Image 1: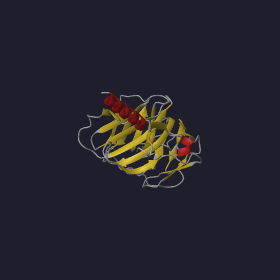
Image 2: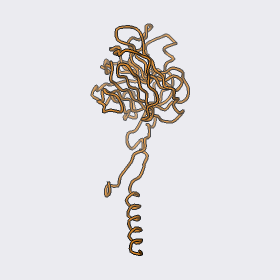
Image 3: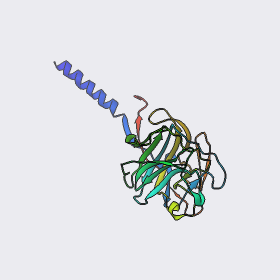
Image 4: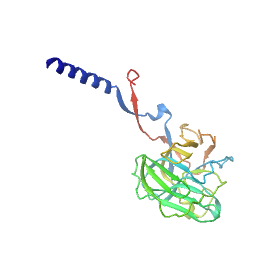
Length: 258
């Protein structure tokens, strides 16, 4: 009996030693180039502001994702947007948006001027990072927050492609050149990181089309590390500022046991 007890204690000690090698550690922003952009409700970053670039054309079976740290202000605002038209005749193309902190996906439909817009019932936490993903399969919109499906649309009817926009892509607001205050006010208040547009429907396998990690940490230009290879520039009026990026917890294993 004593030998069995000794063996059990020895086994437990070994397990404690092994599991002690596994630790949750927080990424250090500056060391990893982990930066984000803080938008003040007026600023914008755009792919076509000083040079033309080709943003992903989305019609269906796509996912738009962003890490968001909302400051609690602003009504209907754009996070990631490619309008179908701008200026005085501004019209939505596709937009990962928020309405009073509730994530939404808005799209103009192909072949007509109608929009499909679907809002989450969940309000994002104020001043805390959250990952928002929106998917569209041609008929149904789904919204995920921190990897959890929170909302599914059911009322759109037949399958319809989204409008294939040829406008620039904007981060931090829905429209850029419009002088209509109703549209100008659709500018984000808070911080944005890890913007990604992909083919495929999360949580299935995705193919990245565009990805902004904002790793530069300085300057007035940010680069798409995805296959689109876009260069996006800050607006000269009230530009966003560089801040520490979103800070996910990372599971790290000791190499001896990992």
